[in-house]
Length: 275
Length: 102
Image (cartoon, helix red, strand yellow):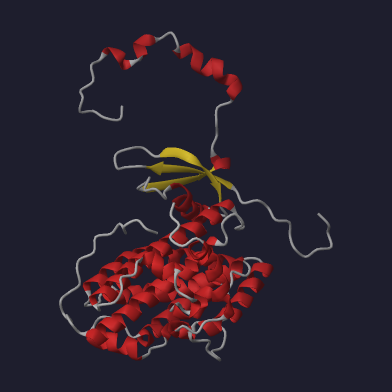
């Protein structure tokens, strides 16, 4: 992850120069946007070598690599924000490999274990559909860097959501067994979807300033997309109940620690190792 | 397969031959094959398997079973007669440098 990111991004619009609290909020936004794709990418790469078919093995890894690329852009920007706030410079690797679970800001949904292929697909679709909307909105951010990174990532997520939705329909409306597995996965993961549309003071401050988006405003459209796909897939949308939340504030399920163990092992055991 | 199970036998997905056009103006070229349940999935799989390194601008997929090939045993009858007819080859014409991909 040490090579320079291959994207030209314009420098930040000078609309909030010197506003420290806004920088703090932008930093939070960058880390939240970075951590979810990174953690999900790690999950997807767990399938390498054992996906149901060879073609899917490659496809999962492709999506994972897209997500790592997105995480890198956001980490690079987070590092720049920290520097302009007068903090010690951190690079992509520092963010990915040198933080503990409680410093990660990903949503709980993406750290949930792969389970069977149905769980992996449902998790992917629920996340893709939300991420697609969030990135489209962020692409209109008044912060030029946020807008540029979001616009690039949105193009990739356009394909991800098309792909995962396609699988949801195929498996939901497939055999009796695939249908049952998909419904089970949907029921299990549904409580984690509420967090995708939580808004805290940071979100609201960014939305107010035109730099971010209030996630609550995306919920209705997400639900419309999800309902349409679930209808095609002959799957029933679970009832809304208890919402599992906390990931965006660093309170994670036990799964993240184990995931990071694997993700961070090399840099923890052999600091600054390179290849 | 035993008959007392409710699960139907799992058939392998059909094989698809993949053709990629690498740039405008060129023809689609055979690049390989893959398995997929239907044409739509074959196109998606082809995108992931064969265009990851920016190889293509267009994908064709064809069911392998729909391709009819000449029989290897007919090789002599089909192709040998052309061997001694050099006058059919356009080697005697100078080609302008600007004409590419011939």
